[in-house]
Image (cartoon, rainbow, N blue to C red; front, side):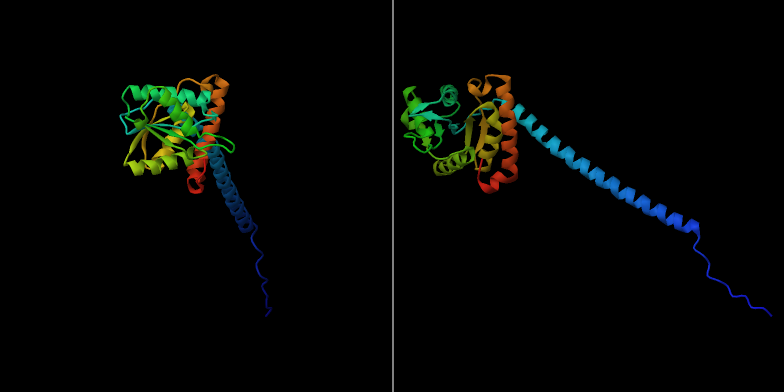
Length: 230
């Protein structure tokens, strides 16, 4: 009798091909999901600033001045006690709101730069005194070197006076960020922006401020509140 010794079967070509095809499909699937994730990140990076810019643009066109505890005039440059054009337009607008009975008091805000003899708050207060606002109706908060530090100081003063509401007077493009910062410091605020002055002179100027405020708002909501800047 002849014994036949069987040899191990060779791998079937079809099984190897199926495994390779399955691996390729899994690799394509992972690549597709990675591409989708990348596209989503790119879309968010582009979309979020556009949405915020739209909010800055929209807020700039609103005028919200409910009856409040005080009108808050955010600071701008002053020259040896004389308000700069930007600050003066804010003071003119605040005076109009005060005369229309929006609030019984005006808060002027802002510190001073190195070498200055006057704070922004003092320059604003002096201007308002000269234009008929009684001293008893004025509160100068001579602190702050940017919007956030100024509104933090205003928030502390509000708590001392037991005030809660305010109408912020600033440039149009500053409305969204200043309102958010005021709310974070305990002030229920509307914003009544100026409609005249250097920040609204040309479309190029307006575009510049919208871009700047978009970046400023995004920085504040992501990091500025923790770092205490902007």
